[in-house]
Amino acid sequence: MDYRIAVVPGDGIGPEVVGQTLKVLDKVGEIYGHSFEYEKVLAGGCAIDAVGQCLPQETIDTCKAADAVLLGAVGGWKWDTLPGNERPEMALLGLRKELGLFANLRPAMLFEELADACPLRPEIIEGGLDIVVVRELTGGIYFGEKGTKDTDMGPAAYDVEQYSEEEVRRIAHVAFDMAMKRDKKVTSVDKANVLESSRLWRRVVAQVAEEYPQVELSNMYVDNAAMQLVRNPKQFDVIVTSNIFGDILSDEASMITGSIGLLPSASLAKGNFGMYEPVHGSAPDIAGKDMANPMATILSAAMMLRYTFGLGEEADAVEKAVKKVLADGHRTHDIAGDGEKAIGTEEAGRLIVENIGR
Image (cartoon, rainbow, N blue to C red; front, side, top):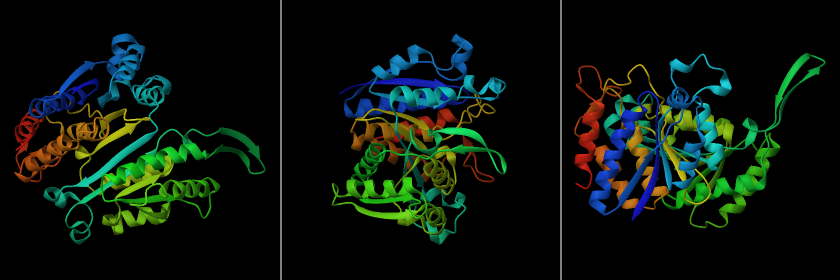
C-alpha cells in the first residue's frame, strides 16, 4: 500500500526527532511492503521566519491532501516576544481547526525497564501501565462563550461549559472503538453530580455504550479520577472525558510514566485522518546537539500506523523495537540515570530501526 504523509518538522528538536522517525517508517515499509511518501511543510517559528506567518495556507492544503500528518514540535524562546495571536503555538490550534481534529489521544505507557523513574510506589505500578486518555478537543469551556461583567462584588469574568449531544457522541465512539482494540474497558469521567453539561455527557456516553456490548463502561467523577490515577492507575484502560478535564488528567497520567520523552499523542478527525506528534515541546536548549529523545515521535508514528492506516502488526513491531532498545539498557539523555552512559538522537534512532521485525 502507498501512504501520503504530510511532515511538519517544526522548531527546536522537531526536525531531529522527525528525521529519525522517517527512518523507522522507511524500515517498516521495506519489511512489510508499504510505500510512505513524505511532503515536508512549514509551521511554527520556522514558518514565521520564512514567510511571516506561523501557519501558511500551503501547509494547510498539503495536510488536508495527505492521509495523515506527522508533526515534530513548534515554538521556542526566539519568538516569545511576539503577540499571543502571532506566536508559533497558534499553528497547532490552526491545524486542529482546519483539519477538524476533535479527539485527542494521549497514551500513558510505563515501560518496566523505566519503573525507577515513576514517582509512584513500585507495588502500584508493578507490571507496567498502559492507559489512554481520550480528550474531546474542540468543545467545552475552552470554546464556550466568554466575557466580563459587573456584579455586586465588582468586575467578574465567566467562561461557559457547553456540549451538544453530537459532540459527546462522536468522542464516545472514538473511545469505545479504541477500547475494542485494547482491554475493552472505558471509564467516562465527568462531574455529573454538579454540572448539567456533565449530566448530558453521562447520558449520551451510556447511549453509545449500548452499541458496544463487549465493552465495560464505568463512570467516575473527575476529582475521584484524579485521585485514582495515582492510587490505582492499573484499573484504567481507556479514559474518555471533556476538554478541560482531559487537559488536566492527561498531564497527570503522563507524569506517572516518569518521562515525557516517551509519550506520543494523536489528534483525530472523522474517519481515519489524524495528526500525530510527541507530547514534549521543542526544547530549543538542546536543539542540534544530538541529545533529544526521538522515542515519543517514533511511538506517535506507531499510533499513526495503527489508527489511521490500520496496520496493527506494523505498529506492534515499532513499539516492540522501542521496548527492546530500552530492555537492552540503552538510555537517551533525558532518561539516563546517574552514572549511565547516554546515547544520542541518531544512535537511538539507529538502534530502533535495527530492532524492527526482529
